[in-house]
Image: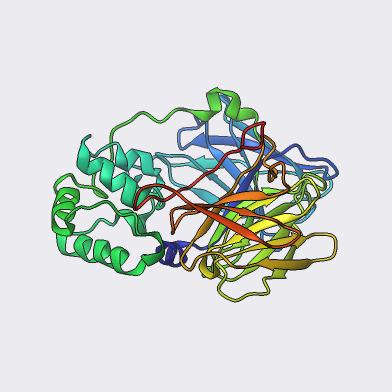
Length: 372
């Protein structure tokens, strides 16, 4: 699963709906078409390359936008909307802010602008579509050009076979024939003809009042799989599945601190804090769990899981914090070996409970108020 993502990922942006304080500069302007008509619902963004932060807003019904609380630095600014060409350029924002208007030209070449749901909606309902979603797009974003192609039948067969052979850790592809699925995708023009679905105008609803801040993490080889928020500091923590990097992001400034995992090829997957302030991490590729202490930057590793267990999810409460049962044990799922596991974090002792039946892949787990 992750090998395709490694090829397609340039940087993963973590999205937060933010209310900023401390940065006073505001960039404002208006977005219009080539005839001077205001464009509602255009996404206007300002990216600070060194901080690896991008702030975005949506133009209102009058075409106007305001990017608030920017640093007095140089940004790459951009305006984009489905059905229009993108306009971008660099500019420096000073203490008084800045002004930048955008003129967008209409275009019918919108394939690369559409999200995956537009492509999936063009496929006919039925068993084949259900299996395609379960086996492929449950992980891969169908709107990505490297995923949707377009491809001919031979190319689709080759891609499907590649995924069967390379994704041994997540062998959940439904039982379909490669040739049959490839022929079905080609016949229904997947990647060639999207569905004709009206796109809502975000400039006409509450989206127009939202400020979105994105943080680039890792590089082209990264797979930033999971993230969580430290309830004590508000910092974001991200696990790089491929590079064994645990990354801390300071939301206000974008400052990033990288902690290297003490095990190589761990496959950081799920991240959750507990009420004591520890960060718990599943390491799928080494059949381990790690506990990280943000106060001193130290790790404790827990082994003893079955080989190929693919430790997946922790039981957590309504706040996203790891739960412990009445005996002080934490519970998690083994996706690869169809079992539940109880871990005593003090002693490191594990108790595995195989689930009935064959071929199960337990994903999430929940604990009730009685610790069951």
